Length: 296
Image 1 (cartoon, rainbow, N blue to C red):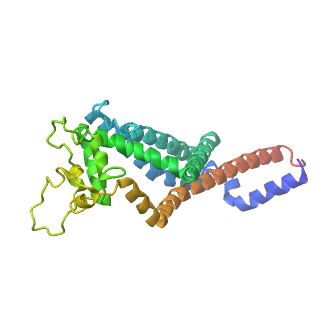
Image 2 (image 1 turned 30 degrees about the vertical axis):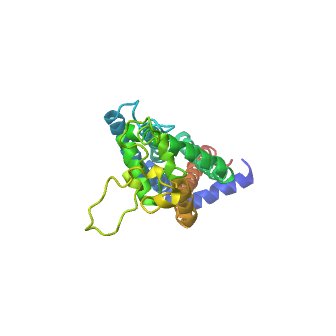
Image 3 (image 1 turned 60 degrees about the horizontal axis):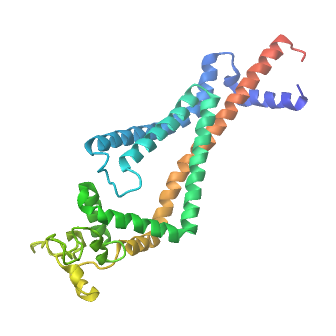
């Protein structure tokens, strides 16, 4: 063994103090001081992941697979199940790896967190660079959702909530609702809602004493843009969503930072614990060899 290596192990021996004891209990306590930080950090994500899995299973069982928000590229219930299971597996590796001093599990946890962080970073950069494509993709999703508006109650409630919250109607403009078979503005359309828009498009009055007219969107597609603007929101939800993102960049940045910091902390702590375990193994090997050959 080189002199530099001996100096390093001697320094570790002085710094770790009781951790270099022959007592397995003291060694366990010292190693788990860093490990428990990772284990405690993983408790909340494990609970969240189990909740996500439970919600996903419940949503999947309560809704038929064919009707579950068919307009979306991915079924939200399946997405919750996959994300929840992956979160549980990753946090399980971190928790058990730190408690059992398992370098393999800790490295798996560290690598997974690093990959997830890099994927999030790449997705954010690509979304910024290809913002036009992202906007077109969102437009396609909203238009597809309009087509299936009456086919799924959850989807209907989601669209109504978005239109009320953002004060918008349709994807690009209120006439986008003509894509729906019930609201299609054609003379041969037998629907009672022909040339209409949903109630959520209507401009609500702040006076709670007035009786709400749930038929306020009837025949609005037959009116000109300026005339319809007196009764409903004529601007599409795409522009409203983009404006909301631009006006809340600091909030979104804070959320992104709040998601990134725990991941970086987990990566740092797991790497520190891995190095501690490796140093402890090397120190034990050195101590064992030194006892057998005190002149080496």
